[in-house]
Amino acid sequence: DAGVIQSPRHEVTEMGQEVTLRCKPISGHDYLFWYRQTMMRGLELLIYFNNNVPIDDSGMPEDRFSAKMPNASFSTLKIQPSEPRDSAVYFCASRMQTGPGSEQFFGPGTRLTVL
Amino acid sequence: AQSVTQPDIHITVSEGASLELRCNYSYGATPYLFWYVQSPGQGLQLLLKYFSGDTLVQGIKGFEAEFKRSQSSFNLRKPSVHWSDAAEYFCAVVPDSSYKLIFGSGTRLLVRP
Image (cartoon, rainbow over all chains, first blue to last red; front, side):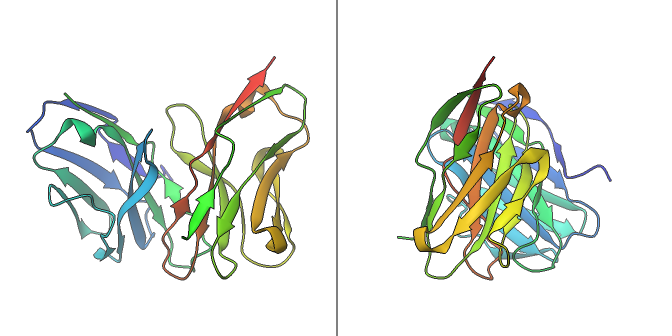
């Protein structure tokens, strides 16, 4: 298995532009998570899905952020409009529905820089 | 407040020396406990986890961790560190059945030759 796939690996954009980050979870996994990692705030959970349905989006910072999961093999995290404070590494993770103790598998992350 | 605390931001050890990374949590019940490692420019990889049973758990890469309920701690150990262990280490908990993984702030491990 190729693991969790994220694209792009690096994104540089200008303030005000729309940014779309993409994630392909591991096949057969029922849960998908989006995290953000910054020096100031560490690793934060933004949103997670179960069977393509958003379950908890309480970590989404504001309305500029949105996430979708149109099918079991694809999810997007969109920022519109982007701001410099959105610069961070964004991770996607997936796991099977076998209880809270099962492992989350992380993708390599997308490093976003907003100028 | 509920939290996961890693009190050491940086730790430097010599290659071959032993290592202990500290983690404390403040949740009412025993949560599900994890240690992840993040190498530079990489995603996170699970080292080990605990949710019941034997309080000393073995993980990958020669790491182990001990759960101590009385101290609300889940410290990570390795008897002999290798240069390739230099990375950032995160303690994390799932405090309930919500599936939400809450991370500590991380400890960056530096290994002296």
